[in-house]
Image 1 (cartoon, rainbow, N blue to C red):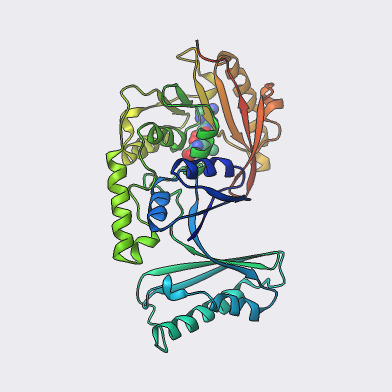
Image 2 (image 1 turned 45 degrees about the vertical axis):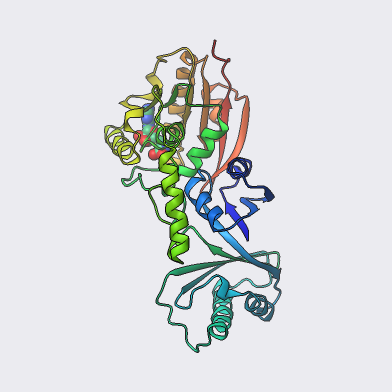
Length: 373
Ligand SMILES: C[S@@+](CC[C@H](N)C(=O)[O-])C[C@H]1O[C@@H](n2cnc3c(N)ncnc32)[C@H](O)[C@@H]1O
């Protein structure tokens, strides 16, 4: 089957690397989408192990659709009984971009009608009960080409299960994982997030260091479709459990000016099973001094999206620039929406990368320190 893993724009190469590391050949990379081939063992493995994917789809058909008739016919052609059980509950969502068929509601209705008609014929019943497991059908109509996918994941893969309490502007777990992979951090190196909020960077890093699969504690939509699928998923999670290996020495630190956020970060680390691997402290980032000659700093400081915050952010970024001076032998990785980060910190980055944090266009500023001695 054709599988498509989706990710935020800007980290496609990272996700493609993860898929290859699991042993699969990537067949196509496009904006936010990585295609490859696999079966339900692949579906289980990818949902359990991919740290930077948002979700995983089964791609069932792709065809030109300039009219509702073409959309109906292309959908009806699919062998739906191969995917959907007789009592399956069918939900359809459509995303239409730059196409003649622009009404999402109408496209959803047409596709649902085509699926239920075909299933009715295939199962020999007039009315589908829709009392069983959920099947989320996603239609992407881009430039008049309809792509029909089935979501295998359900709740987005960023929901690992450890983040249960809210702080303002937390970073998505999948983005944190991707940025850690872009940085040259590895578990043998000291890592510090001086604006750690709910603890996402330190926790994701600790999970990587201990080889804890991100999906080990959660469930997925495809598990509910059959007992075989549930078995495959359980086997994958059990195998993942055996591969956890907590390193003896880990140097992962998180700090934040907010006492409340540090309390929350600690609770999240406990929930993720990595509290012994991270030291959290309350501290003003602009006053920090390094505890070691070499290390990696990674963070997303406050953005200042509201006009009223702009001056505060300028002062904070100036403070970050001064703090950087004491960390001049460190590598530093900063995600912010500010185009003026380098100006305010008076520090020119070695490299920049465009990353979309939700709808916010951000830059990942990268400052490379010298190699550790
Ligand atoms: C955008 S949030 C970071 C979110 C975090 N990455 C997460 O996933 O939860 C920015 C954080 O910076 C903290 N902060 C603001 N000013 C600070 C300062 N001067 N020193 C340290 N932390 C600060 C805030 O309390 C907030 O938790």
